[in-house]
Image (cartoon, rainbow, N blue to C red; front, side):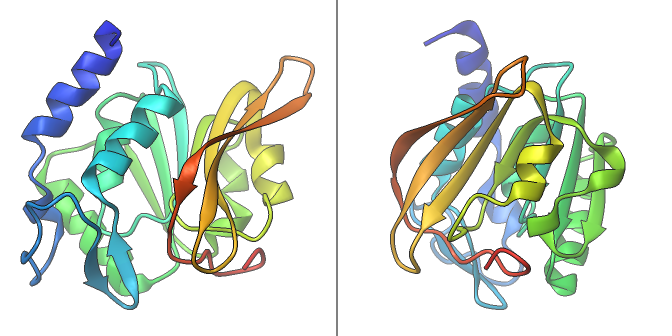
Length: 193
């Protein structure tokens, strides 16, 4: 484990998932996904950790997160990045996540309520992109918003089982895709359902 991975793991260990689950703290301490309302879940904690480590956010990274949800994954990203731009389509979750993250005193997170499958073009390009909902295909708009040398993690596949894929864009714009593991995420809603 690298020093950076140890730092991420140490932060993860002290980040209380219960702080991000409004009114449903049952199961918050278990390594399982938990319902957060509106048909959405907060990811299994170890999966959130592994995705953050795989994405390799750096102190100078500008990160786009698609699917703010409760804000738990957002906190992991924001603690290790310069700026995080996060998009959530469900207004109630968008507002709850803002409350959760403001309570943690984050000042480097920018929130948007909208179709995450389209990204957030006004602030592109991004060094890192994390998508926390599954798509049937990799959204072209997100690949376009990934900076040369950037990385994106996205679950791609059917309704019940997907492949967590790492998308890496070379300095020349060439895109390389590799499989990280099998996962089960809620569906990405919007143009790329």
